[in-house]
Image 1 (cartoon, rainbow, N blue to C red):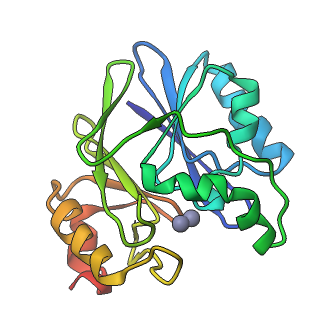
Image 2 (tube, rainbow, N blue to C red):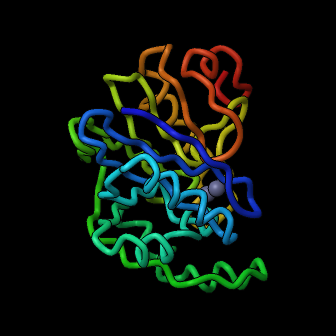
Length: 213
Ligand SMILES: [Zn+2]
Ligand SMILES: [Zn+2]
């Protein structure tokens, strides 16, 4: 599994494209492209590498993680969208979320497949294993690829910090409990790809994240 990183939109959100090196099948994790240039950048990455886009996978559906979904669905109509069912509310309320920030956006496509804790999404020969860690949002999922020792955590965990829990559905205790029992148990060398900011490792956060001591 090969990871390509983009930083998009007003919120400095991290969008990831993961592809299988053998089959060239790929998925977008949290399509946050908003501005025209960002949309073109994401699309041209897929086309110029001859990738075959199979899926949009949401760690969660706060607006900064779904901005580009309508565009991607238009450009790649066969794409299948995956999220936890608790995130459905945010998809349905996407335009409302945007208006609260003074941002007008297109309605994202509906979630096609609900995924929950322990679910597996296959991208070519690569597998992403879903880990449910609520507390930032009710349906926050992390996606772990054991073979490459990487985990996509959305806004659950950041380098030196953890997700906000003051938004609807947020719960700080639940968040810390989930991170501790489900993420910090991964191998220490596991690379953590967050929804914002730089990547880190499980070992580094275990040792130095002030919220997890
Ligand atoms: Zn969020
Ligand atoms: Zn975010």
